[in-house]
Amino acid sequence: MASTESPNYVQKTTPKSGESLFYTCSLPKAALIFEDSSFPAPQVTDDWVADYCEAYAECNEEERELWNDLCCSIPPSHSLNPMIETGCKEYIDSHPPTSELSPTLQELINAVKIARCNSFTSRNIHPVTSRVNHSCTPNALYLPTPTGCSLRTLKPVQAGEEITISYLGIYLFASNGLRNSILLSEKFFTCQCPRCSSIPNENSVPCEKCHPRISGGLPEDVEFEDAPVNYTVAICPKCNDVLSPAATSLRQKLEEKSTAALRSEENDMDVIREIHEVCSQVLGAKHYSTALTGLTIVDSMCLEFNRVMILGQAPEELELAECVDTLTRIFQFAEGVIEGGGGMMCYSQCLTVARGLGCLGDEKSVAFGKVWAEKAWKFLEGFGEEGEKKVCLKLMEGKVEHMELLEGKGDRETSEKPSKKMRKK
Ligand SMILES: C[S@@+](CC[C@H](N)C(=O)[O-])C[C@H]1O[C@@H](n2cnc3c(N)ncnc32)[C@H](O)[C@@H]1O
Image (tube, rainbow, N blue to C red; front, side):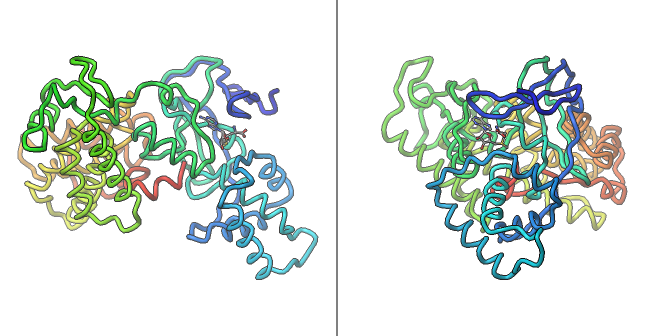
């Protein structure tokens, strides 16, 4: 049963999800569960098969044993397999064996398949963390460190609970359908967690009958969530109206379009802005398509604000106001999906907005900036890097000094567009 033990976790085999880690004691929020090492990190290039071959070839015997012991859930019929085999053959052809330690073709194929199922940020493999299963309501957070990674609790946990993290990056906030299509295509399993078997609300839309559209769109107060709204995917809980086939088809098309735009490498901001506008008019602010397209827009605005602030200037006031508006809705959406999710999803954007408002310099903006810093602090207090925390604390005191602020700029997880994040756990 247990093969690895420490004060905080124990490894057990479970019928539904194989090897799994469980808490052995109760822990408060943000407690360190364990620190883990990394196997040599492969280079991060598009040629990931060759990268993993290189990383495996560089491992010592003990590391290879740990690597080979990890699970491989790619089904034999999966379309990735021929590609992995070809890549490994190419690697062997360009790196002919030089000693007994040189890996064989079969060894490399196996190692790359395992890596595909177990790799973390920067494509590292961590021997203990690779035993942690995914949940769409995770209770732990994976944090990369210079030598490996650490796991911390996202909320208070009890002894006997399973340790779970999210493999989904920003798509943790997507619908049941999208989350599972990503997990299936990229991690080769269908999630068995409680959120996946409950009725989702993040892809629900305002009921057509309770909230009639005005010439195709929602009234502004519904679009922007000021009014109380009844949500439905199929049947409205209040008026029992059934979502019409036309509305269902429109919802699906918009979801598909927004997902394609978000996951496209091109990251065309004009297209994303257009889709975001339609999503917010038709699906409302509580739909994940509206929230994720909104986050991409906010991200690109924050990037620009940071550029301006590096030069010691304040961001353009109107643009900052637009960014604050969108970020407010995104934060509310994320909190509605997962408790504490606002900070997880967009703490670095909250920090940029706080800094931008502070830079405007007038009393009202500085005070508003403090409020945004406090939002970021709720997450950073437990999980932030020292530099980020220092900056955040200063902003909470209303202090804004351009150069000092730059020291702690740490756009970790959420500064990337969602498509890139998905390659991480
Ligand atoms: C990184 S490994 C986690 C440890 C793994 N259970 C093991 O036996 O070593 C990822 C694999 O665990 C399984 N898994 C993780 N989370 C799961 C979940 N929520 N539901 C079902 N299977 C899951 C899947 O087979 C997945 O490919």
